[in-house]
Amino acid sequence: MKSLLARAYGKRKVLVTGHTGFKGSWLAFWLSKLGAKVTGYSLEPPTRPNHFELLELDCASVLADLRDQTRLRETIEAQRPEIVFHLAAQAIVRKSYSDPAETFSSNVTGLVNLLEACRKSESVTALVVVTSDKCYDNRGLRRGYREQDAMGGYDPYSASKGCAEIIASSYRRSFFPPEAYGRSHRLLLASARAGNVLGGGDWGQDRLVPDVVKAAATGGRALIRYPQSIRPWQHVLDPLSGYLLLGARLLEGHAQLAGAWNFGPSATGAVSVAKILKMLSKGWDKIDWRFDEGGHPHEAAVLRLDCEKARSQLGWRPVWDIGKTIWATAAWYRGFYEEQKILTAGQSEEYQKDAEAAEVGGRR
Picture 1 (cartoon, rainbow, N blue to C red):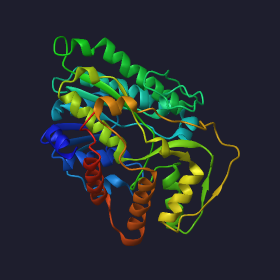
Picture 2: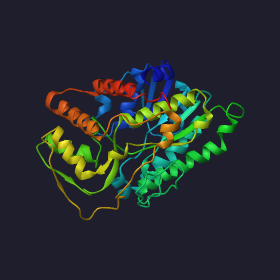
Picture 3: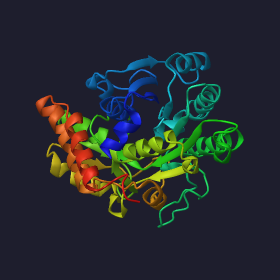
Picture 4: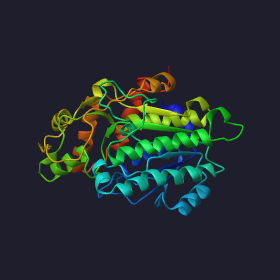
């Protein structure tokens, strides 16, 4: 996989929106190590500390809002990216209850602005819009949700992600139909849906791992809601490898791959919040918590993804199981707080070696 991605992205101009966030900073770091010429477009880092600033990335960084149409268009015109990875979003479910207008404005209007800027660009030939597993109309199914299942969303955040998928599909059908690629247009648009990502460098508000590690760093106990909720947990590098493989294939002109994709963990990765906490505490004994199960806004109790399409058509599969994911996450924070180390580079290299051994992106 490493050589495949290096060929795809080496010296290529790439735009990453949301590069100051948790997932975006890991993606920008990986692309930079592959030799890509990365430009990031995002708001200021949302927390202190934050992964983006700790990495000291060698990339162009534009700190601006996606809703600033002029700045966004000028950035794309100036930087001339060939591929865009769109990760910028208001990503907190509970915040979407307190400020739904901001959530829809950021996640829907921001996306439309980006799609318009890319539609008018002469350089962009591939676009991967990252949404969320919460885009599905969650009916409490025990099976994993598949790409063709209905979009929905109970809370404003989930609804905004369902809207984002519908908008991306509309633009693909209206302006970038795969069957007309190379004739009436030259841009391939795909969307990517991932589960709950874990990993070092996340200090986001109202998120499970950041909540417990911030409490551990001060000797406190985190207050945790919904201990029995089941989520498709995965290390951040797993979905990122999917995004990168998908982007590489789009850059090669595989028009049949311009569509929606799930990048979730194996079945063993869908476990409860309570189990995740127990596993984390084994990796860092300072982690402690107590449960608070009353008076919280609605969140889905069960959510799983079916990733057979990515397996069969991209050769993608999750590399780190839940045990390795938790171990790496706990080790990253333990190293940061106890030894002032940043383990991102080492863990990225380890992941890529494991991906090579698993033949990710190879035989399909």
